[in-house]
Length: 251
Image (cartoon, rainbow, N blue to C red; front, side, top):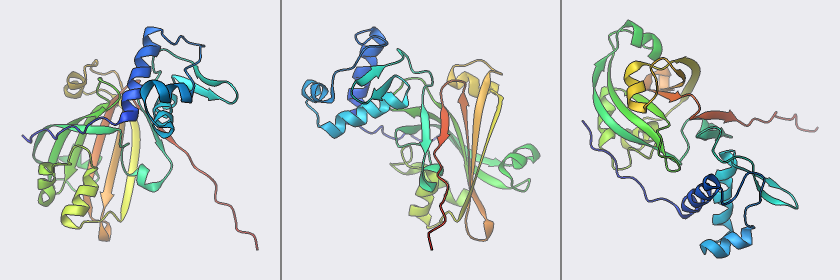
């Protein structure tokens, strides 16, 4: 079993966001009321405007407040309707989870793919993998966001020993350590009933709705070298993509 990676120190804007979350939850700022202005928050928390804006952005992403021109930050919910929202605007963000999340490694071991697992990973049955199991968490919340199963080729197993393992995407660690670059990636999202072992680890009911995100990473010649399967309980994770149509250049 691998040692748990050290948890990074919380950033200042996250501390401010946590304080405001608590005030909203306790009713200091009731639904429909206004938060203090940016200037007032800067003075109260002795923080820069950029830091305050980052904290407010977290509250917006959580669905707790909205910003209205000429009015300010309006409280619209006492509790986040969804625990965590992952917003994707670029290929780099598509390949990885938000920097505001991290993995707590629970176990790691060698495994050989049977037919059922091979079908999920999209590899041949009998292929050997190194499996890293971890709970995905957020700096913002105590409840776990999901359960991660990370399958890497056996020759890349030592990534689990890296000091940054819990905070850095595994495919990036493999690139830095072994020079294996991702040439092609594939993502699959589906809903299933929560498996019993994962349900127990996440504190939810077996068979309850679960969102599963599968990411497959390929190197040159379409060689599959990593598959990450993350299972999220209902209501704890939302995945959004922001796309823009490419416009034909003017002649």
